[in-house]
Length: 353
Image (cartoon, rainbow, N blue to C red; front, side, top):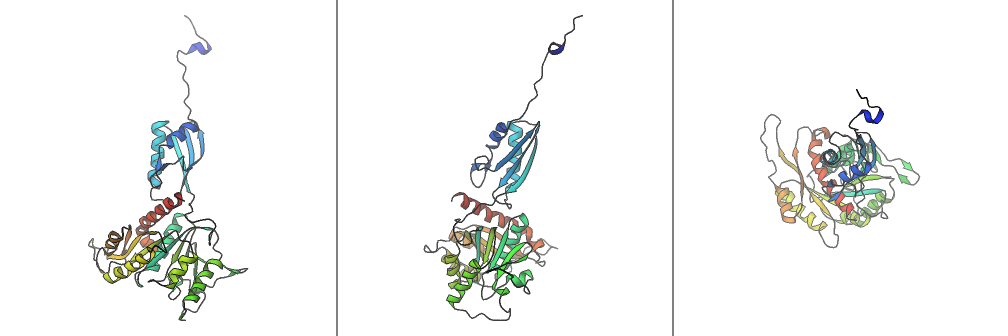
């Protein structure tokens, strides 16, 4: 009997397959960001690739922590690696975000990447509540968020947050925002007696708004929501002149009177001399649906927001129902898709700069 030693002992030599960083990046280059229409590698959204035998780990850096396509993108990354590199690979992703700036760096409030105004054609449509819930939804997703209550004559944010007893502290010559739920907030309601009527003319309004920009230490924020006064007037013009906005969210109810006034607000922001980017319309108080029954009751009319969007070629960002439980926790799921549409638009805007 003949015996074979060393290399000759085995008739077949198996070569262990090893993944390479180049192969992984090539596979991931076939995965596109659905909003930006470019692949993840080109967009530098794949970082810190580490390979150990059959395990590949990397950072997936999204353009916002509230990305509505997060799960779809992550699944597409896994599929690409399993299909093009190794079907048995263990894929470990650390999903993080780097919010993109949609405004110029050298403008006022330069530490804030995106500034979104929330406006309405008339009072009583829940504009401040919508603005606050949008801000809290983004904060809960992991973004750094602030809200500026620019409704000088009727500040609502302190009441909605339960911070009416708070007064801003000073850091040198700058006011420090009041913080609640990890939101940075500032309002005229923190500076004057809540029972005092502010009878201010245009120049005083402009000065107050300017001070909220220059005299508040906002720091670094991903998003700042500006709760505008209802209607159209001097305050809106002052804000547009002093604060370069990323976009405007319009709030209405389905009611005919609210829709008629909202039409005027849309017309103002669409004015060629102002040229503001209207992100879309939120229809608040769309319907009431008791938990015990599935039927919807349209208390204030139906589809007024959609009619506005059709008329002005705008996007309907969402329809928020009337709920007995008005807590943020109860409404959070309704605001998630609204926020998702807003940040998608801002990401596209940032990429086009």
